[in-house]
Length: 183
Image (cartoon, rainbow, N blue to C red; front, top):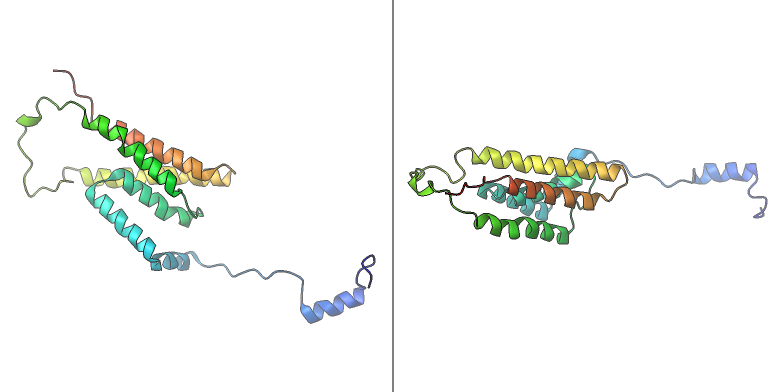
């Protein structure tokens, strides 16, 4: 054999029978249910699930949607939907100035004339629970759909997730309490 002529057909056939085809063996595919089970064995994932449950229980819609995006993203093929710095920016964006602005809004004139809520009523009563669950799931779904679309079309999907999550959370904050008419 010379580099110019290569192997003869007979030598190639002998090597094929002795060593097998010249290819890298592919790893067996792991079923989705086994990947989910592996994820749930990770202590950090369990901490993330507990954090999601606590944020939903306390009514913190924006953090609940971020946690849902971070939890569900890997199941959709996005290993790290948001970088830590992006999560910090979203928290600053949605809890910083909008929180100060909403806290400085004038109180409705008839607020003190309403009777207090019954002591046995939950703070999340009067339909707030379903609204929090729906809006958190809605924001997470829209964000993940945009991320999957961006990834499939070759766009920067982490930036798209960051933009959509921040914009939808700001939209929810701005659409929250209505403006109080001047007295």
